[in-house]
Length: 151
Image (cartoon, rainbow, N blue to C red; front, side):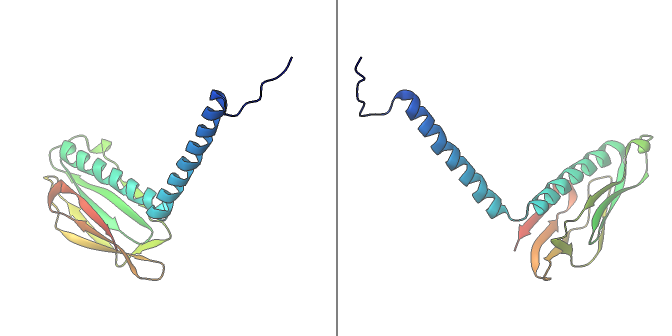
C-alpha cells in the first residue's frame, strides 16, 4: 500500500496545536496579573482584612456589640467590647490578622466601631520596608467601610 503524502494538519493535530497556544497564553496572563498586583502576601492580608471587617460589621449589628480595632505593626485585632442588649456575646470572638513583613503602619491606631454602625473617619498610613508610603487606608463614617489607595 502506498501512503498518501499530506500537505496540511489533521484535525487532531490542529486541536493539540491550539490547546498548547491557549495554555501558553493563559500562563502569561496569570504571570502578568501576579506581577501587577505586587506582593501576594499583601494581597492575602487585604483580603483577610476585608473578611474580618465584614464579619465585624455583621456581628456588631446582629449582637449590638461595639468593637475596638487595634492596628499595630505586626497584627490587627478586632476586639468586641461589652454588649448592651444582647445575650449572644459568647458567640462574638476576638479576631487577629497578621500584617505581612513587607508593610507596617506608620503609628499604632485604635479605632472604635459603635454598635449603631458609626466610627470616626480616619486615615491610616502604611509604609514599606524603606519607610516610604505604600498605602493610604481611609476609614469612612458608618459601616460604609474603608478604602485603600496604593501610592
